Length: 316
Image 1 (cartoon, one colour):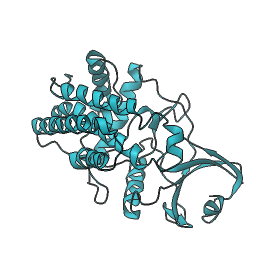
Image 2: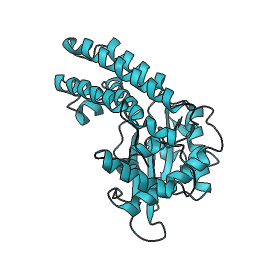
Image 3: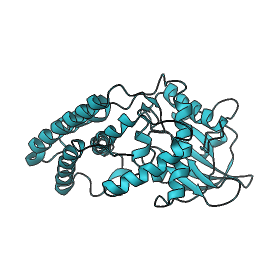
Image 4: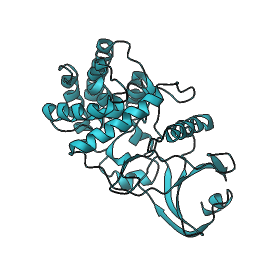
């Protein structure tokens, strides 16, 4: 890894700190000149070069609009580099802590910047990166799980039935919402991908890790910031939208997609863990996965989602 960085002129002093990342390998690296950088080595085979470059271009476009994202550094006119068969990118080191999502002003502040991200994201489509859709996030991963022997034999039939019901509920939710517009999204906009700087010229939220960036409905970048019961989520969403709609109106039909998108994420996440189970980092980090209890909980979770998708959408 140090040799890879040195190949683009980023000479390290040998100190490397692994950061929390399972899909890729990400390190905070001390440079010989006393500065720090973040190096991201991409998991082979996940994205094409064109898809990674499109992500980099999107984040750089956001940075040009002075939106607080952490964009890859351009070195010799390139942001994506390769060494020894691995692709990597170098980023500035950005400190910060998790945002206080129970604070109203924080939610409004986040809403303003997500609104700006989506305003830019709606200006042009992705051409290489995929869309968030029922086929790729629900149908294919659930079929893959059932075909590859991850579920205990006594739970296969129960899982197959409930995932079919859940996907029917997702399709009904999309049909009720109608023809909502897609935009370029962050794609994985949860608290773990937000850094909050408390003071100074850079105070406020900073958005990191656009690795899952794809096209989809705007509400997908908002619902993961909601928690609690229905009353709590309605209040939180209203506060986020107070900031969001300073820059972009949200199509209220998308509110009916929140539970459908949550359902797709749950299905996709279980399959993601299964597909990565031969990576030694995954059994160590997720020891509870692929147990009898894990799959029983997933079946119960999907049953709850089937009911949730038939409830009226949040009102704001």
